Image (cartoon, rainbow, N blue to C red):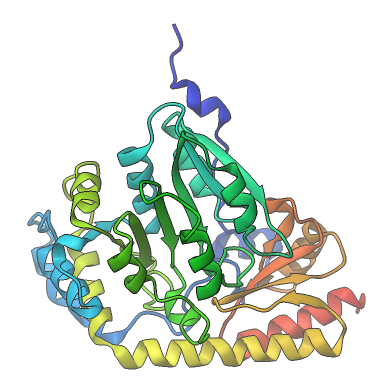
Length: 364
């Protein structure tokens, strides 16, 4: 008898960024700048913290299983009904719920390579078949996607902006994909970095697409721009039937009381989000200036990270930067040996990274 689910043999565990405390201990360093996990360098909204504090005396009580107030407020902010919102314990649970709701054994799901690894993992876990299409000029190859469609195709994943690359698929490119796929295929638009990306006028308006194409799922999160990654809240926007079916697999109390409170506070704090986005592009500008002045190739990003060709072994560079107190994400994890992904940070953090990178690349 096979003890474990057979799909587990095909699955590789997600490799998270290295914890700060582990790096401090390993290299005997007091100060660490973590630019690896796309976290908010400004920290959480003060309104989110205030909301959490107000709930602390009540954590003996189960949270609202439906998170009705939070769903209502999210719906109002997007001009949809609360029945169009389903919540997850971070964006990764939303992705798991999508696979659980749609994938039967043998069903196919089309996705890019490279992109966020949990698409492949969640589909594989349900006995589905991930259909991988290599990036073309560092972007999703929608022509390649379309050529892979058959009667087993159930889902298409588009990470926009794409993680780890950071670039976007434009409105025209999304329109091209939509016009060439059947309406019964579910299009998953992962917009975890939405608030950064909308600064680009060519970024698609996915809520308008949803109105015309109901079999679309839009994924967004509070982890990045709202700065509450530690309490885990993500959400999907879709048609009522899809949200109803996804909610069946979410778990009863998947969004805890403090997480619901933090998300409500974050929704109120528009200033915090504006400041975060402004800082993001200032940090990105410092890095881009350095790369351009030193003829270092990078992918233009509309997320809160940038993908850079350092023309050296990223595993070695990763270690050398850690010795200098800087944690980044090495590209070898995605099979991109000479590339690194660097999160934006405060101006001080960004300058420290640029200085450290320059020292490592020039053997200073």
